[in-house]
Structure formats: structure tokens, C-alpha cells
Length: 231
Ligand code: SF4
Image (cartoon, rainbow, N blue to C red; front, side, top):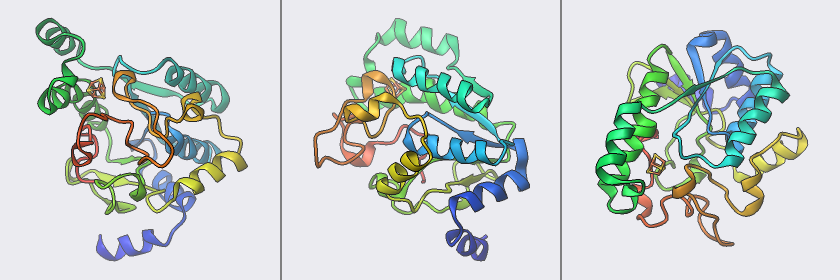
């Protein structure tokens, strides 16, 4: 896929999305947590007439504003959203044994919660698919600087992982949203550039890294939930 990768690198996000729809159709899933980047991709997808599986992971700990944004996507674009929930028994056991805020106690506990509420549901979501599309950008964090636009997903081989806006800046995302009147999560206007689960996300201060508000009690190199371990 090396020479193909070079070709993808010069293609626009719309071209890559179009290729994804033509190549995989509903066997490709657009993974969305309804943040700014995902909303750009959803808008592009809707403008191309849909054709991919739009899915989300409902961890059970999301902000109310995220559910409102999800509902706006459903009504504005008419796209079906496939929601994956955590395994009920795993969540019940976690809460019984460790309580509601175990993720604050250690990195292991935080990863355990992310594994139950995000990683296992993601694996279920990916099982029927051959490719998945994400809104990852290289600029977002130290863990994402090498993200390719299209490559085999090392965590889920032989699945292909497609990141159409990998090379976009935050300003490009904002410009697209403004130009195309894309609805966004109201939390972005309250200084939440990156939005995850409610208890693990806070607003950032001016000049802070855009993912500084995620698991802010941890070091930057640990700040992945297991969904995008290798970009
Ligand atoms: S982000 Fe926080 S609440 Fe959400 S799954 Fe991870 S540790 Fe649990």
C-alpha cells in the first residue's frame, strides 16, 4: 500500500471519502463521537448521498450536549446512526467493585474503564466492517503526528483505517464548519475543543493543547483511550 499511500496523501478529504464509498460502501464505517472533525466528515458524507455505516460508541457517560448533537445529525442529514453500548454485565461488575470514578485512581483503572466502555464496543462495531473512517488529525496530539490518510489498521488487521482530514489544521476544520453551516456540539463554544466522556473532559485555557482537557490528570503520552493506539 506504500505507493497508494503517496497517492492518497495528495488527495482531498472529499476525494478520499468518495473513494471509500465506492470501494467499500456500507462495509466501511464512519466512527463518530460528534466532535468538530466528525461533523465535517458527516457533512461531506451527506453531501455525497451517504453510503457508509455511521456508528458511534455510547459509553453511558457522555455529555447531554453530545446527545443533542447526535439528534441534530439524525434530523438534519437524515442519516441512520448505529449506536454501540458497553456490555451490561461488564459495567455492572465495574461499578459494583470499583465505583463510579475508578478512572481517576490510576492509569490502569482509567484504561479498564475505556476498555469496557469504548474498546470492546468498538471491536463489536468493527467486526462486520472492512474499513473505518475517523476524524483523526496529526496536529491533535503527540500520539497522532504520524497518522496516515489510508493504511491497514495495525490494531485490527486486515481492516483499513481511513483518516481523510489527517493533514487538516484546526483552522481548516473551523472554516469548513462555518462555510458549510455545519451544526456542532455546543460545548465547543465553551472551550471544549476535544469532547469525550463528561467526567473525563474539561474546557481548556487559552494557549493550552487542544487535548489538554482530556484525562487532564495524566501525562500527554498516555492520553489515548485505546481506540487509536497506533494512529
Ligand atoms: S473516557 Fe473516562 S468515563 Fe469514558 S470510558 Fe474512558 S475512563 Fe471511562
